Amino acid sequence: VAAVNPPVRRLADWPAADLRDLATEHGTPLYVVDLDRVRENAVRLRQAFLDAEISYAVKANAIGSVLETIADAGLGAECASAGEVVRALEAGFDRVRYTAVNPPARDLDRVVDLAADHEVAITIGASDTLDRLAERGWTGELFVRVNPGVGAGHHEKVRTGTDPKFGVPDERAAAVVSEAAERGFDVRGLHAHAGSGILNDDDLDSHRALVARMGELVSEVADAGVVLDTVNVGGGFGVPYRESESPLDLDSLAAATHEALDSVDGSDDRDPALGIEPGRYLVADAGVLVTRANTVKSTPETTIVGVDCGMTDLLRPALYDAHHAIRLLAPDAAERGTVSTTVVGPVCESADALARDRELPAPARDDLLAVGNAGAYGYEMASTYNSRPRPAVIALDDGESRVCVHRETIDDLTRLEVDR
Ligand code: LLP
Image (cartoon, rainbow, N blue to C red; front, side, top):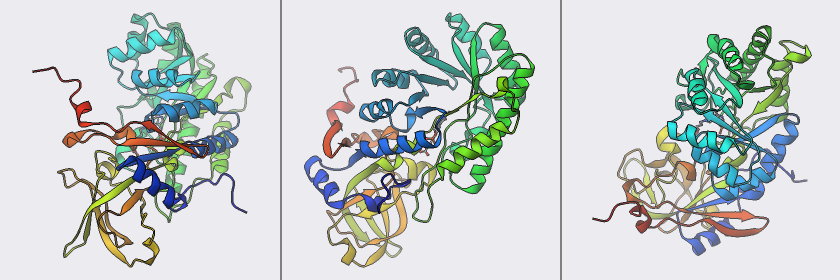
């Protein structure tokens, strides 16, 4: 019996013929995002973390159709900027958490303005943000982000938990909470985020250590007379990018998280609700990027396959050496022998390779290829470097497909320039 809502959707599970049809109709490069899969991921999260406050980290994918789907699934939104807060509210989220990381004045102005009419809590990561909020007349729902000194994640560049840029130093956290409470802020809870892409045992251990530390802090803060109602332990839940990786066991992750929190102190006033804010987990395997081969060239080292998407469309391989599955969508792919290929984009940078020395069925010019797990931090991190317009995005929704973001044009690139 096929699993109704499997914990992982591999690139091989996408119907190749449908992706070829979409590429023929809409051109390439083309992002495809399956909103039904986003819904499935939301359901699994809600089932595993029944009583938790779940906020979707909008930064993973902020396309309106995606946001609306997740808002409809009953989740809140975690936002990293005023822009994300605006987009989340427009998409219908009725609960927003704004994580103010070194917040620009313009962002604070806008968020404080929006917080007057909407349920927006602000998470601060530096005590002087209290002054900046008070100056704007805002003393609403507040979380204090702690730098837990525990990091986790798929790459050094995404391990926020050990980076002093993020959160107030662990040993200052209780004092900042007390100060905020004394100044009349509605202090709701503590927040921490270890990093992004938690999948292996070491990272899970770090996550548990972070949760346990948060529990201790709740007790410390309670000793100082401030009762917190929520501990937000961040996002970071990873998904398998390689065939060899297994999906997270959400149920045991949820159990371990509760256990780490509960082990600290059982008394009721120190038993806060759990908050989590996953991004990648909800959207990564709901997206693919479809691209066409422009050129195939044999070299002494490898076969170079030049495709029409590059680091401007999917930055992760260039920025983090991230691995993304690549699949040849040709109808006869199974009959072709495999070759070691390096799949490169059209951008004038050596970093612009989607995969190096990857065994693939021998690609030919004009073949279509699909890149897996492109739903998270894919379109969202796209740029127009090299004056490359960004791809179109197609949403799959209950068996139908529709354009949800138009392909950018070269004219769009100069739209904000002042006429000369
Ligand atoms: N909460 C906070 C405070 C965060 O900083 C982040 C991610 C999340 C939640 C969501 O993390 P997730 O569940 O998606 O792992 N561009 C990188 C990921 C950067 C994540 C930054 N913060 C990548 O493509 O891997």
